[in-house]
Amino acid sequence: MNRVLHALLLALVVLAPLPLGSNREWSWTLCTLFAAGLAVGWGGAALMRPATVIRGLPAWIPVLFLAVCAWALVQTASWVPAEWRHPVWRLAADSLGEPLAGRISLAEDDTVTALLRLAAYALVFWLAFQLGADRARAARTLQWIAVAGFVYACYGLVVYWGEFGLLLWFQDDAFRHDVRGTFVNRNSFATYVGLAILCLLTGLYRKLALRRNPVYATPRSRSFRVEQFVLRAWMPMSALLLMVAALVLTHSRGGFASAVLGTLALLLAVHHRQRIASRRAKAAIGGALAVTVLAFVLTSEVLLQRIDRLTMDSQGRADAYQLASVAISDNPVLGFGYGTFSDSFRLYRDDRLNKHFHRAHNTYLENAFELGWPAAAALLLCLAGLAALCWRGLRGRGRDWIYPATGLAASVLVGFHALFDFSLQMPAIAMTYACIMGVACAQSMPRGTHRRW
Image: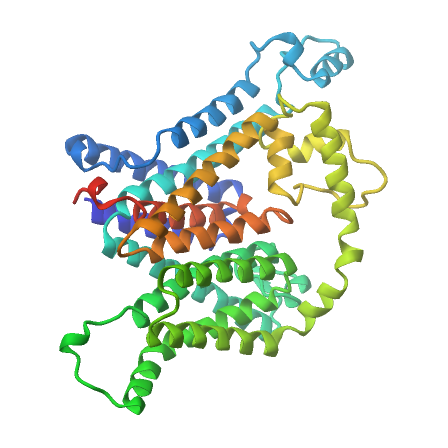
């Protein structure tokens, strides 16, 4: 039963990027229903064998998360005190000449929608956390995410180099200029490829850098060892070359910088554990860095030009950040309603902005705008708690510590990019990150908390 659930979970995660990153109503609704169905199936299996449920997750993390969800529901309620309701509701009632039930949220339907998506991400994390405690399933999960990232990267490169101007079945000349894979937004695709690269590096390290028992090993010549390394590493190295090329050709400055920081975090975690002592580790990491540098040199011309224009292009976002900060200061505790930034921000935008800001391009600022500072801080604390759990697993686990290291690196990647963009608000990326963190946290647990399924 759990093998079937794990296979279906992998299908959900690796196929979620296919329909435009699942950032359409029909696709994210389908993903949410599928995740809910898997959760029901797992719940039925857990009820029959309750002793198999992993209970190592700190209780305050789910409690805080449920509190954030409860607050989002309160924002949609009409029974809240009158002084909590946004004045826009009263103005709308006066204009229409009929009574309206005021709420904290300016768009209650959008709040419910955003809450359902957040619940779907939580279910993906929980399923990966419970099913990823098995070593084989943990390795298989990251392997399939890496394979999916490679396939989507190759598709994006074919469309870009072929100058087809296609995004699946959509035709637009704008698609000729950047690698987008199956995402409309190239910055989001850069984040997704960055996560897939981390999973690929994790698999490469496990394949090449783990030591064998020297007692039973026969002496081998240097040429033989080099030959074996090439035979074992050529496939993942080739995949890494193409994925880094796709990352650079997205021409996403924030996505590229985030992927670099996430990769550095992974390498530092490996260094922390092993001090890069083994020759296999040196070969694996050195080869990965060489391939990354080669791909960057071959494909980075446009990206470097966009970096040169960084100051000029960032003025619009700086103005949006300032206006959002003013809005937060006007309503710091209650917020304007989870998922309502697109509509609520219109109350504060002025002539300085010549574009429509559907997102704040800063997830932390947007959460504070929508939820209010207390609930936004609680949500951020939940994610920080998961990262801290991975840090504990990295330091304390005797084996399989590479999985907590991957979770830490993925958190660095998406956390940094969330400062400049909204990739983590794309359903496919959020589910991929949730799946990686579920496996990482499961493999961070002390062995005494694991029970075999």
